[in-house]
Each structure stands twice: as C-alpha cells, then as structure tokens.
Amino acid sequence: MRNLLYIDSSYTLSQIRARGLEHVLQVRFLDGYFDRVWSVHPVDTHPVSDPDTASVGPVVFERLDESHVFVRGRYGRFAALSRIAPLNALLALVSFVRALIKLVRREKITVIRAGDPLLCGLIGLLVAGRTGTKLVVRINGDHDMIRANTGMPIMPSLFRTGAIENQVERMVLSRADRVFAPSSNYSDFAVRKGTPPDRVSLIRYGNLIDTRHLSDPAGRDDVNAADLRETLGARLWMVHLGRLQKLKHAEDCYEVLRLIAVQNSDAGLLLIGDGPLRETIAARAEADGLSERILFLGNIEQDAITRILPRCTLALSPLTGRALAEVAFAALPIVAYDLDWQCEMVETDVTGVLVPAGDIKAMAEGAARLLADSAMREKLGNEARRRAFDMLDPQEQTRKEIEAYASMGVLP
Image 1 (cartoon, rainbow, N blue to C red):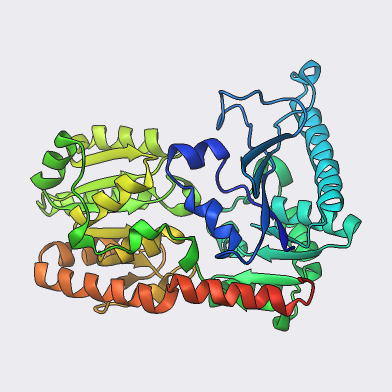
Image 2 (cartoon, rainbow, N blue to C red; image 1 turned 90 degrees about the vertical axis):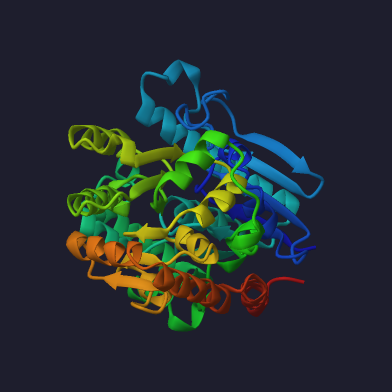
C-alpha cells in the first residue's frame, strides 16, 4: 500500500470545514495513487484559530473516513504549564514529533510530505530521520525575498530571526529526498538552499485549486445575498483575494483605491480574506472618507468566492500565490507587482498589467486604465483564464506529482 504522511500548517481542520476547503484534503490522494493519507497540522488546536477545541493536551487523531485521518497538534502539552507558554509549546511539539514517529512505524508510511521548509519541513526531517522514510518538501514561497521586503522572519514567534530561518531551510532542503516547487523562482530558492537541481520538481498550483474555480465564470450562479448583489452592482470593484498581512503588501491595495479616488473614479475595493491589517485599513478608509468604497468580506467559503469574483472588475495582486490562479480562472484582468511567480501569469497588455514591485503609483495607473476600458478588460481577462489553464492544468500537475513520487523508487 502507498501511505502518505502530509504535514501542512496552511489551514486548520476547523478552517477547512468553515471555508469549504475540503478539496485541499482530497487532492492529497492524487486520484487514488495513495491508498491512505494522514493529514497533519502541528498546531491545529491553537486557542485563536480553533477556540472550540482544547488547546492543550495530547495529540488528537480525528478520522475523516476509512482512509483518511487528520492529526491535530496541540498548542501546549499540559494545562498546569499554561502560564509558561513557550515551554508548554516546546513540550507539545516534542510530544507531537514522538507521536508521528510511532505512527509512521506502526502504519508503515512510505513517504512524508512537508508543506514548507520551516516548521513542517523541520518536523518532517526529524520524523524521516528516525524512521528511514523518504521526505518530500514543498516550497511555499521565496522566503529570502519576503524577508528582504518585510525585514522580518517568516515565523518570528518560532524562529526569532531570519538568520535562524535560513539555517533551518538549508538543513531541511539540502537533506530532502525531493523538493516540489510551484514556479521557477521557487526552484531557484531551493537550489540556493542546497537542494541538488536534479531533486527539484516543478509542480504548479493547479491541482490545489478547488474545481469550482475552473467553471465558466459567465455560467456561475449569482451571489446568494441580495444586499451583496446590490452592492456589487452599484460600482466597479477591484478585488484583492488573500491575507491582509504586511508580507502580502495588502495595504498597498488601499493606496491604489485612494489614488484612484483622487482622480474622481467611483471604483471600490473589495477585500476577501482577513489578517492583522484589517483594522488599520478600515481606520485609514474612515479618515479619508472612503469607508463606503471599501468592502471587507473576511474569510468566506470557496463557493461564495467563485460566485463573487466574476462580478468584480479587476484583481489587484501585490503578492499572491494560489489566489492569483483563482482570479485568473475567473477571467479577471490582473494588476500585479513583479514579485515572486507573478510575472509568469501576468503580462502587460496580455493578461493584465505588471508593474515594478512596490510601485503603488504604477499599480494605480494600471488599474485606472483598465477601469476605463471595458473592451480591454474583457480581452485581458479571457487571456488570463486561458493562460491559467495552459500553465496550471490540474490533471497535468497531478501526473507530474505522481511521476515525481514514483521516481524516488520507494513506493510499491
């Protein structure tokens, strides 16, 4: 049997259920290539992200169906140590790793996959080293670029400094048996960290996209809520899909709105996603008299997102990953920074407008040009959708992923 241990901290089980993200769990079977999967989240019961589940105690094993178990790591190990959070978190992590080692040995798991080269990669490396299991690590971002742009570590509460993160990345990626990179610049990142080039496989986001995003935008059902339908029909909306965080440059989208408003444009800004910048952006909009031109939808279900996107006018993407693919599949023209993999999807006057990283004025000018030309928007949006299918075809990405696993020579 082919058994997979999939370590990923992108979404807690509660978030997956609340947002209709079950596809991210099912795709891990790779159309039946794996017989059984253990999905693992190191801190799934964090008191903030999952307040309804006890955040301290032993590891939780929750069976999703007969072939799939979700392993939920705890934020702390002992209730008596709740006031000593760092020690309690460390003990929880040690307990978590020990539980995974026992699981891998007992269930004869054939391969471990980690969703990032930091926390998940480090856990995967420890478990693989103790069990002799092959390790696959997926690159989830160009961390060097992000740290350079933000001046902060990716996981400051865990690794404290960028220098420590760099050491962890080098240790994990130089020892991984295979590295999956969703773009060419992510492949370069892996090689810089010590991964031999012949161990890197280019496997894009395609099969991670919920299949509802692939449907014809013109044929998608309308937005359920009558008040939201009315709001979306009242003006042209620029949409940003993603976390409202500094590392994603989310506040730049508000700057675009402000600059466009100065030109007497009536366009609005729709933000789908949540994060620590929400209150900051809302306060700025109120101070500038633009509150009625900005709409915060927060974290909403995938079905709602697929309905809303085609009702928008264009997408703003300072820095997004999978979300960039989702807006492209919705046939939206995209105004994006030349950061990360975005130059592969966004080409000026072909699929949208690509501007220099951090150039808010250029982003606003690009958005204003598209807002004023409906024919151009339609042409660029249709081409964005075509390019998304050409580049990210889900079946092709699944085939490549299976091929990469098979090339490791460890699966029966």
